[in-house]
Length: 312
View (cartoon, rainbow, N blue to C red):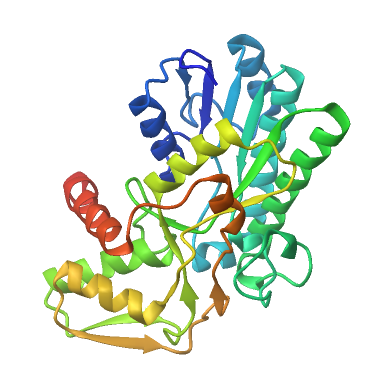
């Protein structure tokens, strides 16, 4: 991929896409293409087809997706499976049709079975039942993986698939009704501090363990894979370490400076008991994460204070 190669970042305003865009710009890539959802509806095949026909795209980072936490996934499963299948199908098909050199599809570690052995190895895909609370999203992402594999097999394309672990960072979603656990906790603790609340309620027991990857590290990994990986198999992207939700909550509590209590609402779902990815494959390729969790949390909280709150 040359510095003047025409590169399309699908989903450039989201958590992942914005980090990829920032990374490419910082590395001197100058021929970048991106559109807002209002300018280009990726769910509409005709719009996507026309866009690829006109632009002569050479490389694609497919980071566009409908995403959300447990609440959103539970309440809108039809939206999650429909929109994501449409988005990825249209982009993958148009990338093949208009001779894109290489495409990177971003999946998620929720593709793995709920009770798969830990850490999660790439070969565990489709070896057991999925976590019910995000099954629709996971099935859509698995479809994207299999589309890339099928196009590679039938058409000789170079479509690769990366499976990032839980992400956080700039441009995350901090809406308490639709966000993931880490940004939701950051906002909860901040508001509890400002409002002098005696306690913060946290869903579940606090026992499930999660791994968290800073979005800038993922962007770095995506560029590295685009330049160095051509395998047909999926590849995990993570840090190789996890911690419990309770430990995460206490870490965020300290960073925010909240001094109240934690109360765990055990009537709410925990989700998958543990979700740690095996990153041996990626590490062997020569890449590993650089940003520690505490450092990344401080950066994310500062971004939240400077951007989300000011816009309110």
